Length: 347
Image (tube, rainbow, N blue to C red; front, side, top):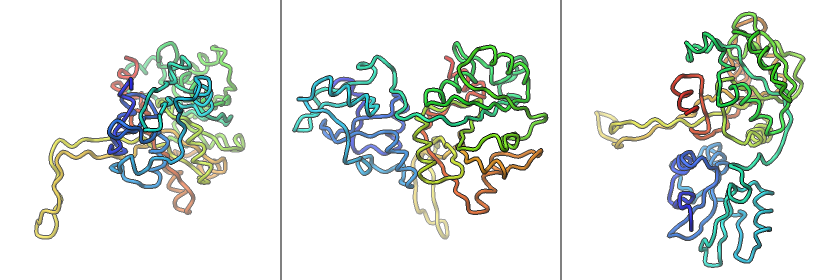
């Protein structure tokens, strides 16, 4: 089998699989055992396992789906291409009756595109929080507002538009404050194929305060995104999780890994050693800065008052409302609002 990097042993943990996906920038891997085909593992499989509170140390073999799409040696290339296109498969292994992999077809080779397009489309409003000063990117933001910082041939703001547009979104509402005139002038002169609405905070109102200006203007489920983050994920999967769980707000959370360079010790009564772990790695779910909200929440945001999105989440939880968390891998989240992350991304 060629391109051995696209396979992973069945004894691998969920964390190891996620890291391999991040290294390869792929969302689907082949699971093998003694060089024989065992199954396919997708990023979605791991996300569902995390949502079900399965440990990241769980062996991948324990969460494999029983029903998957693969090809047989007798299948024609046209059949394989059709199946890959219909199900947006990054790869399709050809497996014989002995579970030997005789060939693998890759999306980028078959369709001459880097990645499949999203499986399903939706057209919901997207609110982009673009009113911040961009302190972490100074002195660049002394001249350019953060939403207009360049990424290749586009600005950050245009990149975010494009990512949502691939999923079908055409309506964007942009909260502005710092250098608002410059942002509006530049964006409105690009002749972009979207419905764009700018709304202004007269003074900084926090990460959710300006949403109060949208009361009565949004009457359906909507996305909110910070203007300094990029999410590599099929957004329709986040929306499906949000809708199927009837969440009022869904937080997109990136898994962040922190290796400890020393052995850690757990002790009990009288200093008795309970456990010693050599150089462990801690994993946390980090708030990425992307959310899905139901429109009634706009009425719960205090008007003309500094108000963070975390304040809104606290209010929802205090009345036992539904707050969901959708996990994505570490490398699927790009926080380009700081110099180090920005430089790494554009290199």
